[in-house]
Every structure is written in structure tokens, then in C-alpha cells.
Image (cartoon, rainbow, N blue to C red; front, side):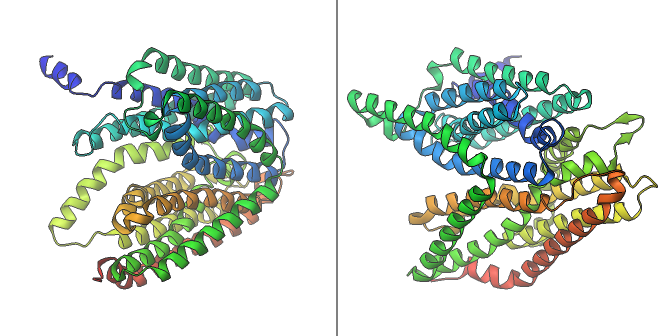
Length: 485
């Protein structure tokens, strides 16, 4: 017991509170992430294409606003204030969506998305400020925080699946509302210890602080109608975001070609190649709450050992593989490296794309062996998710860490932001691919199986091809990463 007390006393003030805040703050997002497409198609009667496009824009805004959240919190509202303000928007948003009408859905989604998009970065910023730059406890704290997030996802997906089976959407969104309220309550109880410790805002005079706070509040509230408008014009919004991402990509290419330091220029070239591979991976990955969700609902036999598996529960396959597989893969890599195996960034990216491709190729195989009703056996979908999740373990943890290795100091902020934009762009492409699925008709599985099979086959082969291309490029990538000036 004394050892436990000693460990707990060694935790920086506020870090423990942030762990529990992370759990409850994640609940609302987990519910919407796993239910949005199903709710839009089943309750609001959106077409598959319309629901898929909305989900694509949802993901694009969520990741895009993460970048802005760090800037707004550190310079205008404080991370603590912006987090609570964002959670208030999430509470109002979930409550509005529970109203059950299309108008309330768009209004609630704009409120929720503005809040969740801005406050995720605030949580990470509040946590990182609890530690000095050279504090070895920082990594462990973020691992615990990541675990808290996955607990929130697990609970959110599980509860969402229960209400999905009963068709009680209002109760589901009220549950999400309560979870978000609890995050605000915990933050309020720990208000003093969550204060910012090192941000540009702390250097402002009291007068400037008040002016910045008013400006920040205006930006926070003003973003809601902007997001509301863009959610209702998904085609235009999608093209706008894709255009911005294209310009950013061209700008990065020009910066790379003009960069004078030879070694850093080579590193930036490697970054651009790996970013394209990452775009392919995350595009297919983002289909899990989108087109794959609809496939699971209509075309998969979800009865396992006499229990009906709700579509949202399938998302927990990913969480289980990440939690259980992470330590195992880490130990495996240590063992392989000790035996002389080369396990580096290019190889992990290539293998991740191959696994993603195999995961998607498992789906048409299952469709070809479907029963007389056209429904595939659940084991094929399960296998697909496992392969995708192992691929995520290979590519996701090293993605952000790679920025510190490959990005020149002057461009680290730009290249980190661009890496996050890749995920947002991938969400839009996932919406485009999911929108290719035909509307269910009589004998839904039999009528839509050919379209699903063709789509999954093409996506799987595409990912496999990119993975093989990266394997072939490994010598070049390694040379670019290690090249001397």
C-alpha cells in the first residue's frame, strides 16, 4: 500500500484528473463516430451517398480543427477555458441531435463538431504542461491518457450498439450528453490544477488578456454557423478542403525542392513519399464508421453464438487489438532487432499498407462464400478488422514521431499540421468511396453484394499495390532518410 501511495504522489498535479476527463470527454465522440451514418440512413432517411458525404466532412473538420484548437487555446482563451467551452458546445449539440429532426441534427452536429474539433488538442496541451521537457514520466502519462481515451471509446461503442439494437436513438444521445457533462464537472472540480503553465497567453497584460478572451469567445461561437453551413453543402465543402490540401501539398513540394540543406531536403522528400502512402492507408481506415458500417448492417450475418452483434460493437475489435497487440508488437520488435532484423519507418509503412489491402481483400472473399440470403459470415469482417488494426499499430505510433526525425526545425509546425490534414483528407476520400455503394433494396444483401465486392476488391488491390511499391522503394527511402549533406 505504501508503494502505491508513493507512486500516486509521484503523479504531477492534474495529470490524474485529465485521465478521467479524457474518458468522459471521449464518450460523446465515440457515440457520434460510430452511429452517425446509421442514424442518418435509418432514422433521418438520408441516402447512403448523403450519409457517407456527411461522415466524410465530419472527419475532415474534426482533424482540421485540431490544429486551430492549439492556436486558439494557447493564445486567446487558455487551454482550460477552451476545453470547457468546447465541451459545453458538445453538450448542447448532443442534446439537439436527440430531438430527432433533420434541422436539429445539422444544428447539433455543427455545435458538437466545433467543440470536439477544438478541445482535443487542449487536453493534450494541458497534460504536456504538467511535465518538464526532460521528464521521463511524460511518455507514461500520455500512454495512460491514450488508455483513457480507449476506455471512453469502448464504453461509447458498447452503449451505442445496445441502443442501436433497440432503435432508441434519443436515449443514446442523452447518454452522450451526460458523459460530456461529467467531463465538465470533473474539470470544474479540478479547475485550479488544470491552469495553463506555459503559453503565450500567460505573457499578456490583464487588458490584453481580456481582449483576447473576448476575441477567442467570438471565434468559438462564430465557428458554429460556418460549420453548420458547410455541413449542409458537403459537395462544395469537400472540394474546398481537397483544394486547400492540394495547395498545401504543392507548397510543401516547393519548400522541399528549394531547401538548401541537402540532408534535410532528402528527409523532406522521404516525408512526402510516406505521406502519400499514409493517405491511402487512412482513407481505407476511415471507411470503418462509414461504408463498412453499412456493409456490416445489411450484408453480414451478425449472429455469433446466438448473440446479435451490433454494428458499433465491431469497432471494439480495433480497440482490443490496439490495447492487447501494442505491448506484444513492441516486445516482438525488440526481439527481432536484437537478432539483426531491420525494423524501420519505410518497412513499417509498407507492411501496414499490405495488411490494410489484405484486410479489404478478405471482404470479397467472404461475399463469394455468402449464404443463400447473401449475408457474409461474421468471421470475414472480424478478420478484416484485425488485419486493419495490426496495420494501424505499425503506422500510427510512428507517424507523429517521424515528424521530429524528418522535419527541419523551421518546418516542424507546418509538417505536423500537414500530417494531420492527411487524415482529414482521407476522411473525405472515405466518404467518396462509401458513397459509391447502391441503396439497399428488396433482398438488400443479394442486390448490393456485387457493388460491395467490386469496391472492396479495387480498394484492397490498390492498397496492396502501394504497399508493394513502398517495399520496392525501401532502399531509396532509407538512403533519403540517412543521407548526409
